[in-house]
Length: 252
Length: 384
Ligand SMILES: Nc1ncnc2c1ncn2[C@@H]1O[C@H](COP(=O)(O)OP(=O)(O)OP(=O)(O)O)[C@@H](O)[C@H]1O
Ligand SMILES: [Mg+2]
Image (cartoon, each protein chain N blue to C red):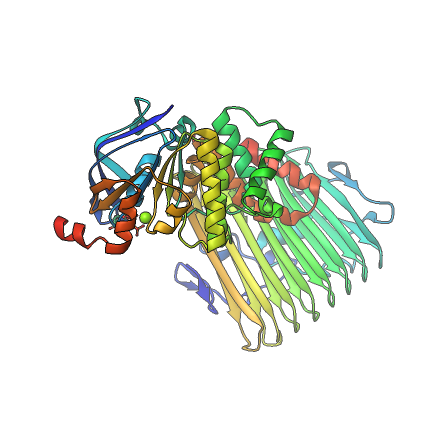
């Protein structure tokens, strides 16, 4: 069992024009096996929360805490957080020229588990995970995210999720840009990781269609850097029908 | 930083176009070296160690190891031979000094139609640090194919001229490796003349040396020839590496592609890349591209990068250039580290990935492996 606790989190983004406050006091607790959906209008701070958990250098926590099983996550470097069991599937995965997917995955797996994976086992696991996600085997020879289509990038993120077996994963708009089939395939990947590893999931999305595949236990509404409302799966339906107008008026 | 169809200027002194530079084999035709000359403006002159003096020594046979396939021959000839100078003659003083002081020339002959994929090896390891001259002439007969590695190791002070003459339809994969130890100075001028529809792949790898300056000049005066010029370098504290590739497009329908990539890993490391491409009026149908990228891994390192493209005809297939020097991409590091990879390893991955694009062009497994090993060893400790 793992617990990620976010308490009174205030975050500013560091820009050339100075710091700008984005998150204004977020409280959220995610336990192993739970699925939390986060929805909210563009610019409300969803990605900021995701990046802050992962430790992106552009985001500065000005107040509050993030704890993983009581350990202070904010004291950890980016790689330490990943090794502690946190994972972020990024909204915009980064290209790394000249580094093959195969080399990247093996290096990451070695770093996370503290030792190089046994070759035969690793090759088998990789093959299975890739075929589950309907990825061609020659994919591993390509450079990380270079020239990947939108859908390939997202599958590659979920491939890592399945191979690296984190405790808590934040998926930032993993559903954006996916066609119907890809959406189902990617969702199945998330569900496998959830079931096999008792993964705790934070699913950031704009659309309820992914929630037909991945059933959230909780839905949170982000508005203007704060949680405006929380509820169960039914809240997502209402948001899809009514939009965020209600909250925006209230927060204005 | 980059100029299009213009000539370079330095210290307010206008420089003639590349084609109008003086050419001569005699030292007295070149003035004493001065920083105000564009071609010497970056060079730490105190590190030349006498290579610009009128009289210097000469590399002897026993300082060169030559390993060739049976069908390929080597011999030393008198430098007064008509053969010497077939690919080009000096355009600067150090090259003229080396030319004049090398009384013998090492000739490597690949007979016409001979094809070999085995790498031929020429290894130069001077037995003292005295300033010495060396002249090498490589000829490929018509429609022959060869791979050659010119390796420089140990400690030395070397003024070198390398001539490469490709017959019609010949193909050469040529690598010049500068793996000098601390205390070395090396100025190499390399001339290539390409026959009709011949292909040259010219690769420069600079890994060590206090001062390494390589000036590969390729003359495309027969139609349909193609040259690919690649360079890869890793400069540490104490290294000064300068690369000045030059492509002279004279004949019709020739192709040139120049790509150099370097990483600077130590404070005080300095690299210079000046890429000259001249497309003459006669060079109709030319297709050319040149690129230089530098990755600075530390503060206090310096990479100068100057592409010069002179175009004298509008009837070309394409001409372009790109040049950029920058720090680590924070986002790349973040992405790798977010997967548990520590900062040092992440930086190694990024640097190797960056240089890989060029390394994989070498296509000599031995050389590639050695290079990757050397880079890995050099990058131990970066970012920690
Ligand atoms: N690097 C940055 N520089 C300037 N502003 C930034 C930066 N990163 C985030 N912001 C600003 O912070 C706010 C929140 O951005 P964030 O990406 O967290 O929103 P989001 O809820 O994920 O939006 P979306 O639904 O569009 O992905 C926005 O106003 C955005 O412009
Ligand atoms: Mg976002």
